[in-house]
Image (tube, rainbow, N blue to C red; front, top):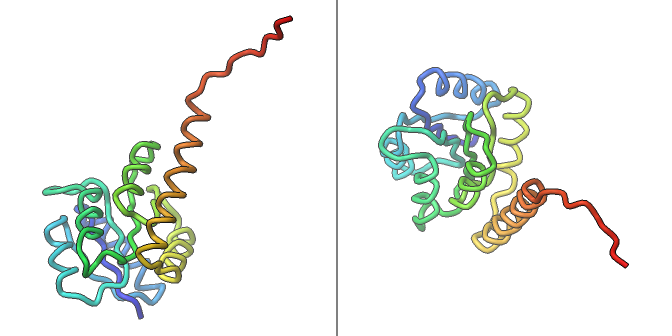
Length: 157
């Protein structure tokens, strides 16, 4: 079974995610902060990471950047989990290298579906850059549409 790293400073969140992932048949290792997560990753054997955005000693966003910056972990599937679901936060996570963003609270069914997809589609470095670029472009277009004020059409003759 795949091994998933859960990096979250909240004990309750780590325990809930661990229980849910164990029920799905995954092995789980946990870390309470970025330094602990990097140490677990250095031990090897991690197939995916679930990372909370807000952690002491370095955010989950920075942890994503560090994971992507290392040759040993650059292709690791990463899902960022956060209660902060502002468009800026989601885009920042995706630009930092996250493959997916799961907003809290979430259902077990949603976690299951997204984990299966995350582990099934382990892209190459080239595919990851293309996917990230497409996701960023789509999100930018969506943001532009939402932020552009509607201008009434006036016909001038």
